[in-house]
Image (spheres, one colour):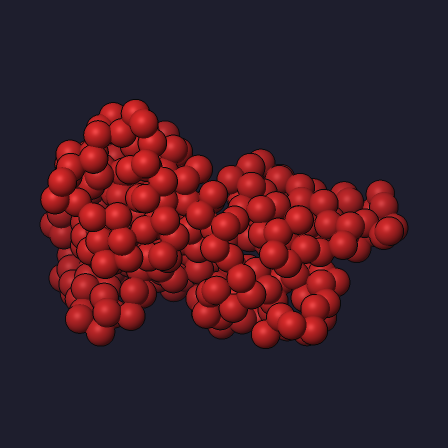
Length: 296
């Protein structure tokens, strides 16, 4: 049987892909999932495997803050380098039915003390997800602004917002505005005319940009459509869900990594072709050689 390599960013990505595409409900013949251990290494690992083997090699990466146009281009018919349509692979674990299944598994654990006023059904999962998104929205709006400005300044030279190790994200609108303006001013001072446009992006402009971004991701229709499942950083939503469970009285505390394990188990048991809309896993499987007459 010929081998097909699928290169992904890290072990958590590989765990999800393996559960779904290797021996799961849909199974790609001869598929080997390889973690590159870093988003910047995916292309290098894929190139190395293409050069050193005669096998089919493909890759899949987080969307992060890439534009939808760039994402859709990655799924062109002749492509072998795909980009998830959601922010990162963790976002696929956060569908309310998967959260509800994970809550039920946690509640049934002999070690767990579960509060009487907390359910473990889909309605509860939807409430928890909405609350996690509400808390995360100010941070997400800040990162939206940062990446919009990066795209605008890209033709002018050096990147901006190279955050140092240990940097703590602002918690407020004013905090994000102050941070963004400060970074732009420093970049303009250091790189001069190469990022001269940075000097024209001042406090008022950034404040307006941030306000518009925050309004967009807290609008009623955006919340109702669960836009956070596509756009927000999945690992941050996982962290908020973990915190909310503790705040609601679940003990011992359920860490982000433990919650991820429960969600992964739920995905493995509940996934069927078409579970997601669109179903990137099914499309990816088909591109890599999966054929099943009953998959729709």
